[in-house]
Image (cartoon, rainbow, N blue to C red; front, side, top):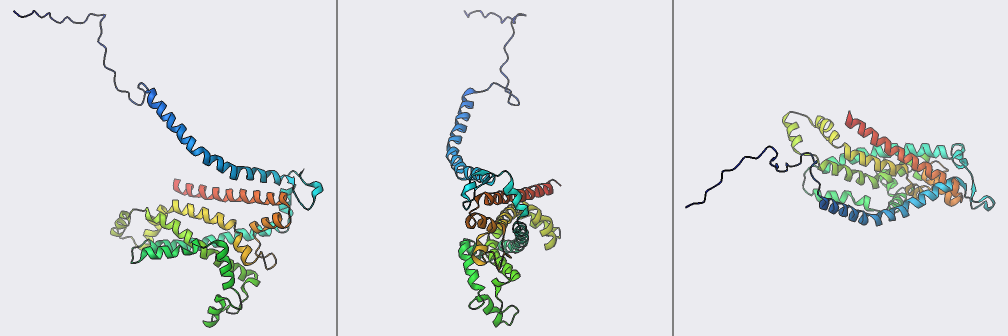
Length: 330
């Protein structure tokens, strides 16, 4: 005989079945404390790894910056020990606008920055477009283009100073033998010729850097869009203006910010080639700052000049960022 099976009785009104837990939607389900603790541990470990670098950067940059700002509000002139360390308020900053050398140095610096960045941008972009095309020996040419950038700035400035020498320089030798103008010019003795020599020396070294940044931006542009533009009948100028330039804007912004700030803070090329001369005709802000600090021993006034330089550099970088961001939004 088989055991009699009792029929299943339905659940009473007070007995309800417990539904299975539904999966959480939108992250509102039950949390897992263990996973969150592991994530917190990973974050703490990451902070611990980054902390030494942050402390080192603060020690290298933050303390000198704060100390420099402190000096700009005090009389820190080693030639006048009686008033050394006295609080000066904004007297050092007021002197910037009454100094007969500061404003002309600012005008020269801005003019040189505008011309040098424009020249380097045009030539660097042309070289980047050429090096982005496939041709035999492209790797060797790319490496050769970067050689001037690898030369130290002081060494390249000294090299160009010797090349512009009126007696034994290579520039006058070539111009004279080709019967071209300026073949017998004393380049570093005149205002405009000295600026031309500084511009050539600075561009020779920094055009490869501009080319490298723009070439990196060109490398990430997909080739398919150029094929589509060619099929649609777009010419070379239309492709460049409507495709290459808009897609190159991120790299272009980085290149312009770096080169504009570097040109605005130029010092070593001027120091080696002209020493601010003839007279003060090639004196730039960084050279003026160096004179105030290390020749006149006025660290308070020199600190005010350096703070003004820093603020102007930050404003230039902010203008670039806002301008490119506005273009992207539009």
